[in-house]
Each structure stands twice: as structure tokens, then as C-alpha cells.
Length: 236
Image 1 (tube, helix red, strand yellow):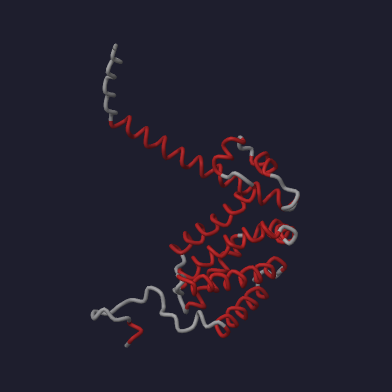
Image 2 (cartoon, helix red, strand yellow):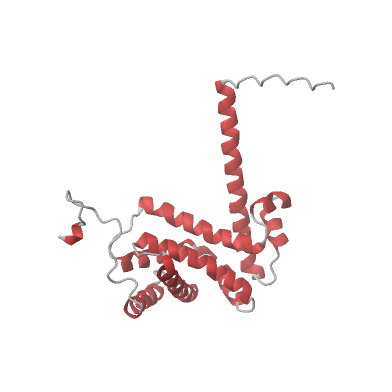
């Protein structure tokens, strides 16, 4: 039986060649991020005019100007794009901590984190108002979004120094998720420049959760510096 001729080993890439390949790979990742961001932006723009119920995946892709096949590689449905918005909000929030670290009590940190999330959506109140209005008629989609928001709330609990693991952590995330969505609805109607009404409601609801459920009080502060004996500075 004739044997297939052995392939010649590929010549090693030069330093310049490796650099070009790395640049291409990096550019590809950046391009994918641009496509994802364009789809999320198109969703918010279209949702502001069409609402959520009448909006289709094709509407989003067409408005973004992205080829359908490229869009589908990143998000496969309009719900996928919406969940992508939530994930992007999480990432931007984490990036903000480098410039503006958290301080204060766990309750103070939760207040700060939630208001930072609201601030990210300040230009898209019309879109989110339409979304919440339409989701009342689509309970399954509402449940899907709520579950994703609860994942974000688990992240906020962790950042605030509140344990979020196990059954107790799950209940804390659910309670904070319900609080978040309630205050978010009020924030959408808050036309004041300083969001004073929203902040007052948020502070009140956090106090009620703290008093009623007790999941913020008596929590060890997060990332507390230690002294030379390895004990928390709070213990002295």
C-alpha cells in the first residue's frame, strides 16, 4: 500500500511573524467585543421605541449593522442580548472599583454598588421602562431575567463583604434581587437631578432588610487589614 508522503515540518515563525499573529488574535477579540457592544446598544435603542414584546432578534441585528452570522456567534436570541447587558453592567461596575474603591459598612457598600448600577443606565430609562412594562405579560422571560439579576446581587453581596454561599447566601441574593428590582422601578420614574427620592427609598429598604432579615448586620467587614499577630484590627 502506498504511503502518504510525510509533510514537511512547518518552518518556525519569525519574531515578527509571531508578533503579527498575536496582534491578529488580539484584534479578533477586540472586534468580537465591539460586535457584542453594538448588539447591546442596538437592543437598548430599539427597546426604547418598539418595547420588548414587539422587538425581534432580527430587529436588533439589523439595527446594529452586524452580519447575522457574526451576531449569532455571540448572542443567539434577544434574551441573550438582554442578559449580555446585565453581564456588561457587572463588568463595568467591577472596573469602577479600581478608580473608586468601596468603603464604609456592608450596608454602605451595598448602597454605593446599587446606585452605581443605576447610574450606568441613566441614558436608557425609556428602554428599561418599556422592558419592565412588557415583562409583566411574559412571566417566563421575567423569571429568566430575575435569575440573572440574582447572580449579579450575589456579586454585590460578595463585594460588600456579605457571605453569599450556601442556602443562606441564596436567600440573601434573592432578597437583595427583589429589593433591587423594586427600587429600580422607582428610579425609572425619578426625574430629580440627584436621584434623591431613589436614594431615600434604597436607604429605607436596605434598613428594612437589615432589621427584618438581619443578613447585613454583624457581618465581618470585608478585606479588613490584619495586625502582626494575624488578628483582625476590628478585634482590638
